[in-house]
Length: 102
View 1 (cartoon, rainbow, N blue to C red):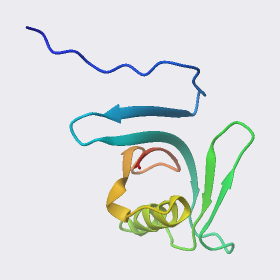
View 2 (tube, helix red, strand yellow; view 1 turned 90 degrees about the vertical axis):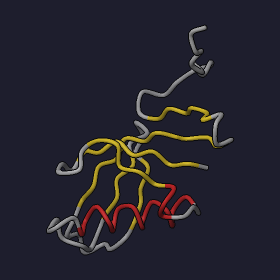
View 3 (cartoon, one colour; view 1 turned 120 degrees about the vertical axis):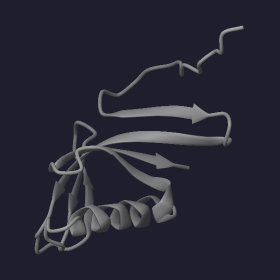
View 4 (tube, rainbow, N blue to C red; view 1 turned 180 degrees about the vertical axis):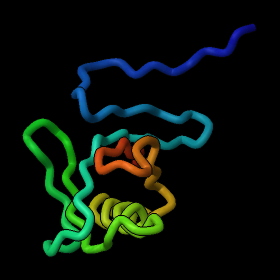
């Protein structure tokens, strides 16, 4: 018997999607993120009108330091563990797709 995939219902924002991982009983939310490494604003998360998160990071984009700082800033912003934040796409780009597990 073929396995069935869960498909969420309801309206969607083009930059935010929610999915349910039934094997872990967790909800995963996908965000479009614009990282700004080397910013003097420090770790700060702003939500744009289009739903894109802009994350200002003090860390420079050297040896993955900015990605680590991005994960820490988003974990602090959403009140989750750093292990619950995953960069899905854009590891070497300023525009990233990030999953956050609730």
